[in-house]
Structures are given as C-alpha cells and as structure tokens.
Length: 381
Image 1: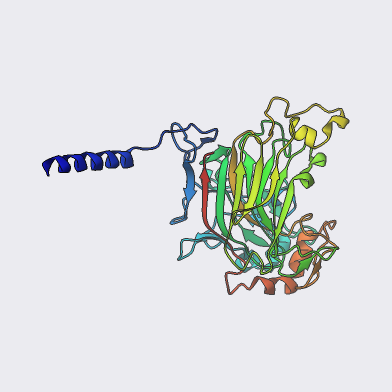
Image 2: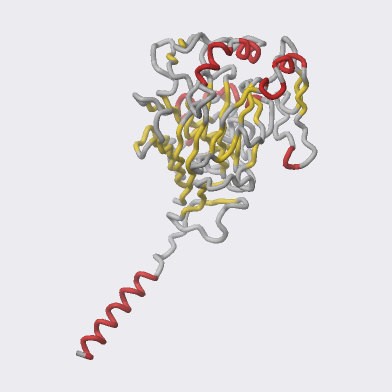
C-alpha cells in the first residue's frame, strides 16, 4: 500500500509541475511601444493591449482637440468633455455628439469665435491644419455646429503586426460617420497617404441611404480599407476596400470588428468571418498600384513587401459628422434630402440650416446616435 501511495504521489507531482510550467516563449514578430505597451520580450499569442473600459483612462486615450474637420471639412469640433465621451453604467465607452448651439446659442455659430488654444498641455489644440485651432463664425463660414470626440493611443500604445479585435455597436442618425482605424506613429515614408492608413471599420449612420445604383450605404453597410499611395492624388484605396452588409443594420446589434496583420498580408474580419485580405505581390504596394508607369521614385523602397504597413501604428476611435466627400451628393436618403453639397463653400452652414430633416433621426432622447465600444484588444502574432 505504501508503495502504491508513493507512485500516486509521484504521478500527481509530475501532473502538477506540468500544469504550473508555462509553455515556451516563441518570440513574436510583433513590436509595441508606448506607456501602455508590454515591457520586455513579446511572445507569440500574448495579449499586449486591452481596455474593457471599467474606467476611462485618459493616460491611455488622448483626446484630439481640433476644429479642422479631419481633412474632409467635417462639421464637428473634437473636444474633451465628459458629456460627449464617457463611460455608461455598463462600462461601455460612449461617444455621443451634442449640438454646440445648446451650449452657446445659435447666434454664436454665425458671429462667435472659437479659440481652442489651451493654456496647459492637456488642453492644447492638437491639429492646427484647416483652421483647426481658431475659427470665427459668419454667414459664409458657420462654426462647427456639432461637438464630438476623437481619441487615440498615440502616446500610450503603438504596434506593428498582430491581431486586433473591438466589440462595437455603431450609431444611427443621418450623416454620422463612426470609425475605428490606425495611423502611423512616424511618417516614415512621407505625408498621407504615403505612410499608410488602416481603417478597420467605417460606416454611415443613415438608416435609409442608397447610392446612385440603389445599393444601401447607410447603417446596413460596414467597410474596411487601406489607404496608400505616393501622393494625395494617387491614393489607391479602391484596390484595398472591402464591404459587408447586414440585413438588420450594424446599429442594431454588437459586432466584432477584427484585423490580422502580418509581414505579408492584412485580413479584415467581422464576427470572425473574413471580408477581405490584402496580399501584395513581390513588388509590394508599388507593384499593386501600377506606379512603375509614373516615373516616380518608390517611397517604400527601403521597406519590406508590405510597406508602408511595416511600421508601428496607433489606434484611433472617433465619431465624425458630414464632411465634403464621404456622403455622395447623388445618394438618396429616406430621412430627408442631403442638405449640403460637397462642392459648396457653405457646407457646414447648409448642414446646420437643414437640421429639421436630420436632427429627428438622431433621437437625442435615446443613445441611438452614440458610438459604443465595449472593448479593444490586441494580440501578438
């Protein structure tokens, strides 16, 4: 009996030691940096970033503060305000747009001055481009009528290669433009789009918006895109743009928006189902874009096959409104005609003055118009 107990004790000891021993670390191709990045060696499969938003950690998420309109002359003012970006009672990050006129009155939009050059580092205007730090309203240049939020991990977390997943519920409301995307930490290959942009998900908040072909391009459509090209006018995003449709609408349920990024390809997924994979040829994106015919110098010649997507990128989450390129002028909207033209010098004013059609669709007494994020996670390859 003692002999049997000894054998059993040895067996249990071996099993317990096996359970306690960690699997060997296979060093990952993933790199990460920033105040919230892991320190030391990164092993394949490691969870290197996660935020479940039990609290809104502004050391992780820096608010952009600008009136610039993101290069698209969008109609929002991105600001840091807990009535706009906040945690709800279920630990969900909410970005809920507000009307500027509710705070300052409508006359201010036509005559007031917004100067958002803050006096402390936390209040600094983050983007002066496109009159982003100071604007004065007039009949011709109506001030940004919407307050919203754009947050990023520029200082806290950047990574190269890996798997990203975010659980999101997209907003509904005419002319809302939610996005989860990545931008390069350093423009290694030059200004946009030479150094790349990764759009994991974008959508339009209109519940009943169709393009000139009759295709639904509102809440029933979600898209993923890579932006790249040697110059602004030669952005070849159309070669790397993918779409998924939902009969109910992506605003109706929570979905998982995912990206897998390796040194040879990038795959976009929704709810674990691939919607598109980019695998550039041996000549990389230069060959994919047929740029040899331009007699230009390849800006990615010092990178690898997937350049410009071979550098660290940071995470951006924002809710934009309108703008002069994302919503087609010839689209048909069931909630009311688009109140501005993309070519109009008064686009922001026309949008505001047409609020009797779009504001009811935002359902301001609900959270329908809020961009909701449950979590964001990144794993190493």
